[in-house]
Image (cartoon, rainbow, N blue to C red):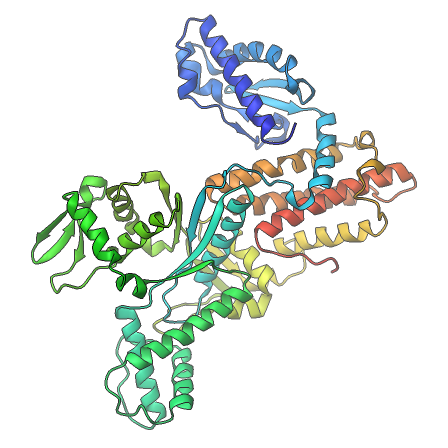
Length: 560
């Protein structure tokens, strides 16, 4: 029985046992339907391989303490397990305060996991949880007014890794970049480039007070001077400068993302959206639902009726749109393209924007939970113990390209995922350059390289019939097999919480268990049968490490 199927059967058995226990004490058996049975990996390894808190959820209905009710459920559950296909998988059921029901899987089953890993290889951990549901993940979407910074790099690493994970568990994923290629910021870019171009041509044109001061603006102006010479001197307006700057910066962004291992399926232009009439159609839908009104010369969206803290302006008194207006139309367009689940990944300065976007989704007639907005906290870069300040307008920032140039793509991606999205990230360039256990990237890379060197001694390590799993009986070997079995569940947990960090933490822990095992036991020894079995074991570690890092977009060297 494969992963996923086991958990489903066990959850069903628990549900049946709780229902029987409640029935025996004349409690409402319908309560089990309200309290969903969930299985988790216990944080404390001594508490087994799987754990359920269902007794904690239903003990009040039973009018028993959680521990007492858990024991009643256990008495009902054990016969169900022993008479089902779970009997050879679940070795022991144990109750732990304050009322957890813990499950220990058998060693024979754990040995079989090794066979699954060898057989499935790169597909180990893959599942059909997503059932091919169409999902769109929009991330980065940085305004094309400057190069990508490390803040954008963190969003790129997280968004791309989450896309990999969702696809791995069966979702039909589209990666999308929303290109804000019009508006005030783009106009200011055009004015900034124009001023630099005129300066290069010998004119003393004043630079805009709020212009973009980065050196890249001079580079763009220089390229314009090379292409057009002095023919633009005295030109009216800034349109040609804005459009040239847009193409220049967009090309720069695409190259950085490509070098970072991030490829988008769709680049969606706000300018094309505006010219399509779809914005007006979206507003008309809101009008038909009586969710639009005029006040103080502006046009308002009644978002308070749908959970927002105040109504929002969609057209200002001068007739111009607010940022919200095209965003409403853009999200309607997503649904019209057939996406059933939307994930938006935004920076922390957009946190207050979530309620109004959620209100818009409900107003358009779509379920509130069909849109998930994830906020990625900023990354602070440290160099030589000092914080590196960043401001795109002031031209004081560290680009993603600079970080990749200093530590490489793999290390950059790994470090951007080292903390949960909601946690601020301190990116210490000095630390990640160290080749020691302090550096988490090196720690995993070294585990991977060690395993490849071991595999040189056993060319047949991937042949399942050439090893005897009964020889793997050391506590460390059992622990490794238990951890390897968890990988599919870890991937699903990562998807469920929208946190690639969950996968990263797992492979970091797996690397630690391997290093401890390697330092304590000889893998290649005098006993050829034990050697072969241990080679298979560490090869399984290699496969799972590779699968985890593939999801995170990080490659590993075979030699170090």
